[in-house]
Length: 68
Image (cartoon, rainbow, N blue to C red; front, side, top):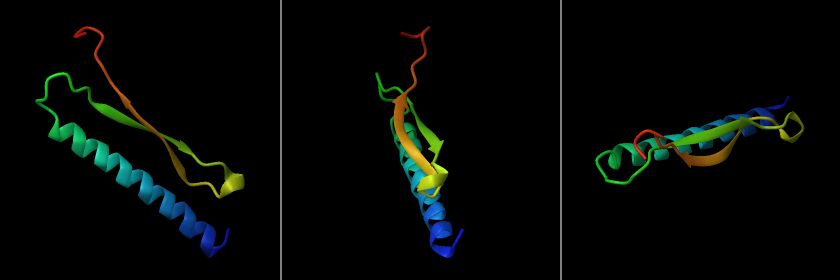
């Protein structure tokens, strides 16, 4: 693994972390908003053939079945 590959893996990790922090900020900002469902970020490891790293699959809403 060369320097460029290492930097690519680090970059994907930082981008995934930034996305997660943005979602966390939205969750905190909307804590008392009626009808808002908190969201979680789904991350998966990247394919080794494409350099590895982290891929964000997206954010999904988490709802409590009892409250609905």
